[in-house]
Length: 275
Length: 96
Image (cartoon, rainbow over all chains, first blue to last red; front, side):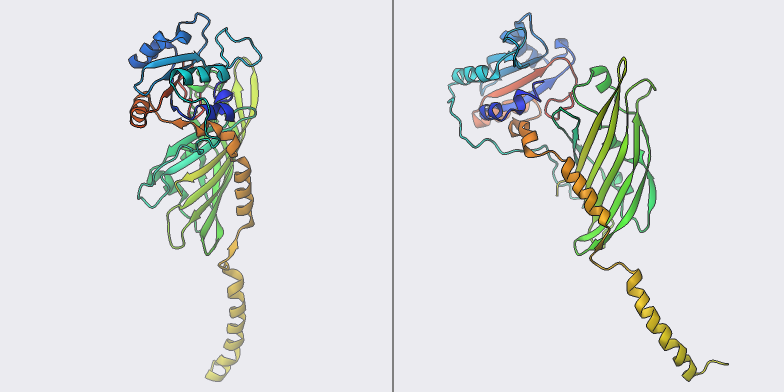
């Protein structure tokens, strides 16, 4: 609610420009690290008996608590009951911090999570954008070892490969904001046959296509699963046997099993990094 | 008829001419890329979120509170600590 709401609102994001931002996620207040618990326990939001489960703690440059408010936005609901109006709370914090309320019109540049070159002559990994309807994109960064790239070496002729070889990618294809008991149980079964085939060459390099069906499941049959298809373009420098880049799309449905079955369309775009 | 120099030439030359035209038809030209490549790349581009959907990454994220304290002290800036108490997920990535 906070991530897809105020923290993605351009005006709110701009008003948070002065801040260095970090987050802690956990299951319950009891699991907080000591330094976060100490801040939380002293905060007004943390003491509110009507608190819910998302909190904004604003600290000065020396890490001292200055202001706090509930992280779930009030929207049409009345402020209170564990919710806050960001557009009123952030200026309060800026005033307490003696920071100007007027900010430059240009916000911070968009900086996605990224990987550094590793000198192996291969991409350091991939960045995945995982989306489901009406939810903000999830961005996952996955470092990959040379042996994890090896199944994608350039084919001389079409060859089949087990989808399980790409489990590192496939395990991330689940929606945000689902029940913790579901989200905390990752996929353990990866099925499907993919075909990797040569797809020509030009002066930039050689190409290959990787395509096929993928299915992922959890330990029990009555738990959530995914079924869909994967298609990817891989590139290789002329004369090289190493992957240079990948662009992939996984599309299908997350079969969200709670009391009943809900089919959630999903799409994941995958790009190698860095390039 | 036994092959001789003259009759070898009479059937080899046409054969070589035929092979010369078949060769380029079977080998891929340097600029020949499967048209499915463009289709997959187009699908990827359509599936990748636009900048406006990624506004949260205009915030100045660091992984931990300790990282935030170091950066805040160095740059003389305040810290926003988002605390979520109902999931083990990751607010920055969005899987939470």
